[in-house]
Image (cartoon, rainbow, N blue to C red; front, top):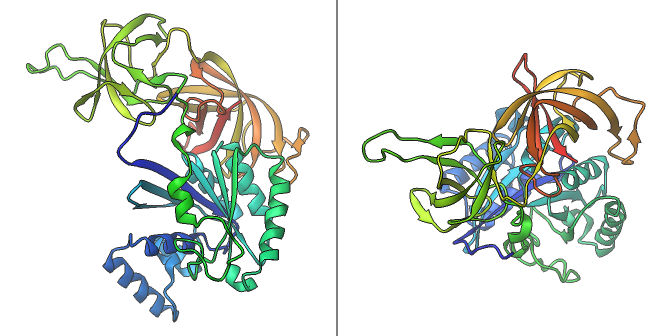
Length: 420
């Protein structure tokens, strides 16, 4: 099914990789070369660099906003930056490279269309490269771009790039990656970032910006299975809108059109869509990731946490879930422990029935003996919820197939999960 045309496509991408491989510098270079920086921002990072005794413009300071990040020269939390080209709007999530901030990387990558994994040309593929590539494949990020950075420090040597490309391609065979590309760059000097590099005439591929502008992301959303989790009921109760009732939320899958027959979950009743509104204007259809309000023909019981679907295409309704979970908390995961589970717009309580296995990121080995799940570990769990959820497999729908776990005592988000 062809996605309806939109004025300007929104593309989200995340950066990942090991420590000091130039993620923040690359984003700074992208923003600088696409003229997406205000003059006062430029002056501020010049002054910050001078205070630290740096002679060159430190573009990494554009994204490293926390004081501790600037002092240590590392990225700690996810920094979001925005820029646009005539064709597309971009949201960038600059994720930390340190192993103890893997949870922040998962947060930044969870909504991305593209994962940019940076590799230091001098060091090649390291443990964090494999870890982040695996997480990107686990999160079903459709496009994986390997940027071999710091090519200026290896004299722009083609053999260095080819060796890294071959080694990563061999590792990626084990991963579920649909689209894998490689670009040799120098973020510091701008080689192959926005402009074609004169130092690497042997590379006949595109620049990073050209890739970002032209990679096909329209089919990344599921446009087949109609899913509309209700976020809130709009009921103005005033004279102008005396009988108005609409259901607001974000389309999680499929295309909803005026006149379509829909089924309400959990009640199972069917009715028709009479109108769809986007920002106060009527539209004929709604598709991911649009946030709209939908009016229905009949006055049926529908509230937050319920879902609109097609009569002959429904999600699985279940209380037993098999999930892959990335654990965020320093407090270990408790088998038989109870947590709050948030799925789309529903919040229920759940219990960990069993820990199936813990995953070794480097070898992708499933360890069934070790059930001690600590911070940044990835494991497979069996969960039981107090109420039925309307779920799809994460591989089918990244919204209806994802969930988070919250510690009931501290209200801390302790894990992010993907339904298998």
